[in-house]
Length: 199
Image 1 (cartoon, rainbow, N blue to C red):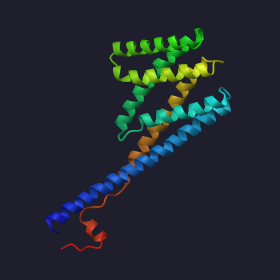
Image 2: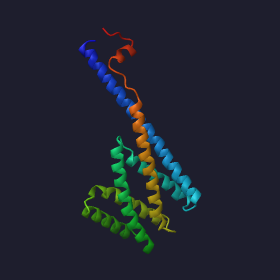
Image 3: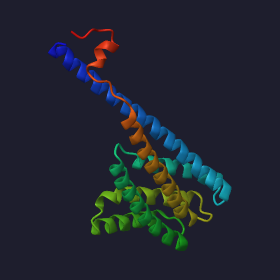
Image 4: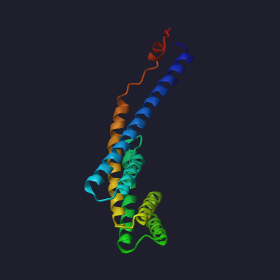
């Protein structure tokens, strides 16, 4: 095999491996999102704890959590999960306390966003401000849309997040194992597969 042919074979092998990993990762993520959505919507439907609109929102929020933690390495997935759950817990506490006392108001939303950002900045977790404040915004606005039992919204979103994270972590772990089991063609094999002979 000439140096040029060998280099081309190595490049083709790397591209094949990258494509296999990408396809596996994408399919596994899609399956996990489907499972997250199905699990949380069925769970909320069976519990009758929330109306149909909240079931659909719960499915969407679980899918968001799954996507957030589904990474290319298990360590990254765990770090993302810890970040997501800590940000959600802070939002949960702030929103639950507020909604047990007050109805939704735009000023209340702004105050909670400010408190969340300040607290996370002070404890050195500024990277979680975005996640916490997005969660707070979703919880508060949905509470404004459905003011009946608005205090349930933080609880529901926490459950959605936990389910989505759990499915995402397990799915990421399984996907990594599948990727490692996919055989990559060696450069020596590739010319033969394309009908070429090795000099």
